[in-house]
Length: 121
Image (cartoon, rainbow, N blue to C red; front, top):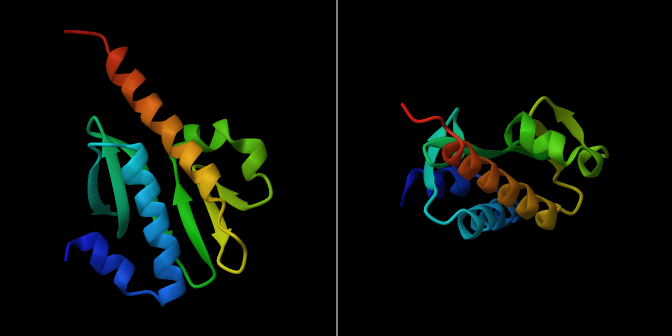
């Protein structure tokens, strides 16, 4: 059992299922991503750059796609409580998995473009 499995396993079964679904979305849409615990939550990197993070709380799942990931989907995220680069999906509502998937795909593309456009020394 790895650190992500341990993290997910500490929550009630219904929350575990939501976290597992988010994890699968990330892994399926960011092949080769590095999976680790950072800031006490599941974290993913592509090309050694932060991709997304997620965490469960008492009443919501926090999803962190960096400020650029959130600004790109600002209108769709507007109905949720947000911070700079974070959004809270209430546990008593349907989790917008399709939106999360699009956010992950956007961040993967963004990270790949950062590497591609990086000036050579």
